[in-house]
Length: 376
Image 1: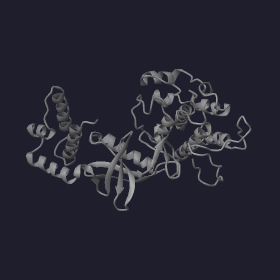
Image 2: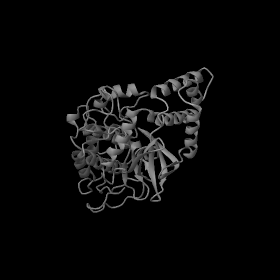
Image 3: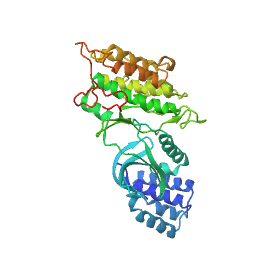
Image 4: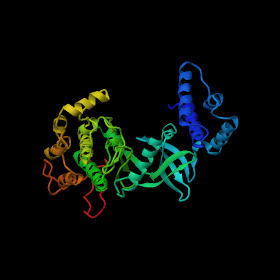
């Protein structure tokens, strides 16, 4: 459970900083001292410490408390009423909220007070919103609004009622091949849209893929680690790792420049996990997993699940090539292979019957006309 007193202290400090009462150095000094005192079994409130050091006046403390009281501890942010916490992304917590002006439910991503003390994190958080706002596609969660309210930075997104593919995998253990193909198809479409804008996601994994309850459309979410290919500087420091170890590409681990082929690798690792119920590179710690990602070749999926077709096995293994030049070179190329594999007229089961698309775990349905939206 998060330390509520620490969260409240950081919120207090952020307001003092926003009002210009103190400097960032003064705040960091007191926060560090507060941590030391707590470790020693003692503890003082941040406001008291700032007053003792002469950084804040009593009147300024009262003014900050008044602001916090009127904010209702952030149950409202200007045009939004926060209803419940629903998750956490790479750059902050995500809440279910009501947009008051339009009386609609949205997902509200909020930058934590601790990170909001750092201008670099603020810039990165707002940049995530701008990147996601560029993308308009049915397989990508879209951004509605971005702003700052009472010292809190936020952006509002489409609210998706449904479950993650990670949850689907947890419930099923292993997904049938048509289901794996359909998930991969829709993620590839999302990546193709992002690629057309020069954007790579850098954190493709089952937990970042949602399936809507109402119409069973897949939604790619959490662009917190996304990068625009034409930026002069990366959002991460050279040599650091951005992504999730179990699905990350070798070039990301090395801290090298990455492109859309890195997302294709992560999608390959995701397909492997869905089709076999096992990770391509299991391990008890991130360093062990990353060493395997760099130096080991994964066992072919068919050795883990003989029901997988040779064609899907080959697609997954091509996605997981260590050398990016040996993978599919663009999402559209992967999309073409997956589309061919999913076409009932070109792919027959062992019994000679065509496979129908079946992704949500419900009864299979005939493939809709090509011009219609693809559904699970």
